[in-house]
Each structure stands twice: as C-alpha cells, then as structure tokens.
Image (cartoon, rainbow, N blue to C red; front, top):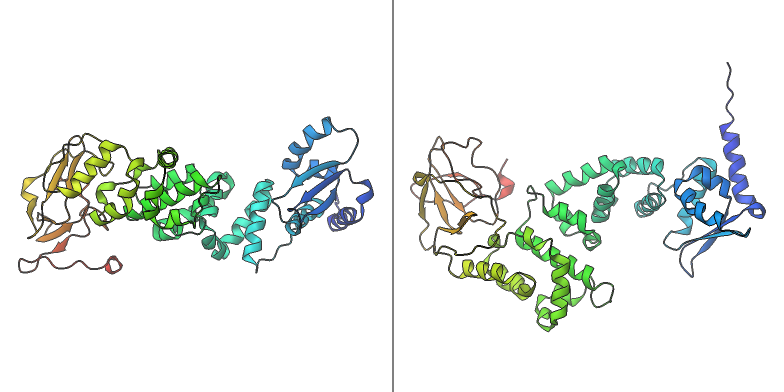
Length: 396
C-alpha cells in the first residue's frame, strides 16, 4: 500500500479558510478588553474537532441557539496570541517568539486556560531549556505546574529550585498570587530552609492581599503590608477577617524559633490573629526563657522527645539565661546557647540556637538519644573554648 501525504496542502487550505471564510463563520470570539479587543470569526466544526475546551463551551450554546452567530467573550486573552491559537487549530502549526520570554509565558497561560495539552508539553520543554521566565514568574509557574498533571518536569524543576534557593519563591513578585493549597504544601515542606520570621512575614503579606484585595483596601504594595506599625489602626473586624484567612497557616509557623526582637516587632502587632493561650505561652518563653514553660498549647517545633542522655548535655555558655525549657507533651525547647559534648568519635562542641540548622549531627541514633535537636553544626572544641561558626557557604 502506498500512502501519499498532502498534509502541508491541507494545512494551507485550512489557514486560507480561517483568513477568508468570514462569510460562512458561525462563531465570533471577542478576545481582549475594551479598547484593545478584537473579533475573530471561526467555524464551530473546526473548534469542535480541534479543541476540547471549545467543544464543551459550544455544546450548551448550540442547543439553545436560534440560528444566529454564537458569540464567546474571552476578555483576559491577548488578541495577538489568540490569533496564533486559532491558526494552530486550523493549520496545525505553532508559531511563537522564543526570544520574547514574556510573550511566551503569556502564551503558556493561554494554552493552559484553553486546555491545549499538546502545546503545554511543547512550551514546558521550551521553558526548561531557558528558565529565565520561570524565575521571573516563579510563584505563578509553581502554582500552574502543581495543579496540572502534565507539568511533572516543570513542577520538579520548581521544587528543586525552592530546595536550593527558597528566596526565589518568598521574594517573588507574584507570591501573593499563590492559591491556598499551593502555599500550604510549600509551608508543610520540612526541608524548606527559610527562617521562621520570613515565613511569618510572607503569610501576613499573602493573607492581607487575599483578605482585602476584593474591597481594594489593601494590596501587595500597600502601607498596611509593608509597615506593620499601621496595624495599630486596624479594626477588630480586620483582624478577624485576616485570622480566618490564615487559620490553616498559623499552626505551621514555629514561633519558638523566632528571635525575641523579631517576635516583638513583627509578630506582636498581629497577636489578635493568634490564639491567646499560644501567644501568652510564646511571650512567656521569650521573657522567662530560663524557666520551664507550663503551656499545654501546641508547639509545632518538634516531635516529642522520648529521652535524653544526660552525659551529652553540658553547660550553657557564660552569660546565657538558660539552657533548656520544656513544653509538656512536646519535648525540649532549646535556648540560644546550649553547649553539647558527647561521644562523636572525637571531642566536639556546638551551640544550639533553635532557629536554624544546617546539617545533621550524625546518622546513627544510638547512643546519641536527643531527638529532633536543632543545631547549626557540630564543631571541634579548641582549648576549652567554643569558636565562632563558619558561614553556611563554607559547609560542603
């Protein structure tokens, strides 16, 4: 059997039909907003065959249509890029400017909205070849990739990037565009190497944006977001609304790992959105860190500690107010100057600051039995003194 292909001729004929077949078009699609909107004349049989999105869109309309042209409004779609989508539907060829990453990313969003899955895969691979636009629109890309099963490679790229450079998401210009589910998954990641105060500031800004955006009373760049002092002017209703927005996120913040200075300046102004028993407990911890805490409230800092070998818990550094506090049912809370010494193969010491860590002390659990102990680095003790820690960049 011999097969002759005339696909190129067929493609040209359909493109010509798209460009010159206005008189027999039965669908008018208006793309863009007022002032820049354009009308596109299309044919329902092409849209029904080539697009699952328009197949669903047209099904209900055609059943109730009285014979007039079907009108579909797409105000959020760039007319120039929509023309390229229609040309793809008719002719099977895709044309976009790969040297214009902004346009390419916008095209990416349109193909997602219209569910053109085969184009999504092509664009995903193109992004991964030159990830500049991913970095510039990181939050949006993360959200799209996490909500669409076809973007597995793109999603893995985003997760790996966050693991190595978490600031790219928390300082992203479109961070406030993250949806609730994506942000929850992000904050629940225990491998996320971000200071707790940075997480707190980020969810506050996100929460304000989500809570007050519809009323126009706040935005990601408003003084209420950037200057926490303005919170003193807030009404009770504002705090209540923000609390409702952030109720799933507040338990994910490890308040005990925030410094007293940051707690006072950046957390305390929002105390009305934190449950009173928890807030009082954290405040007590920062004020009287040398005493055991009597709280029974949840502290999401660590898992319960079963036991600790007393031989490896040494003295606090000179001038420190305390060494270990305890929260019943939740295990120890370490002050900022705990000194440890134990059988690590050699003599080592370390300072536990409780608000950051770099590497595990060791892989073997026994005989070192303090669980979930957060430290910067186990370092060698020299002449009885505890040297300054090297910066994280010096660790291999």
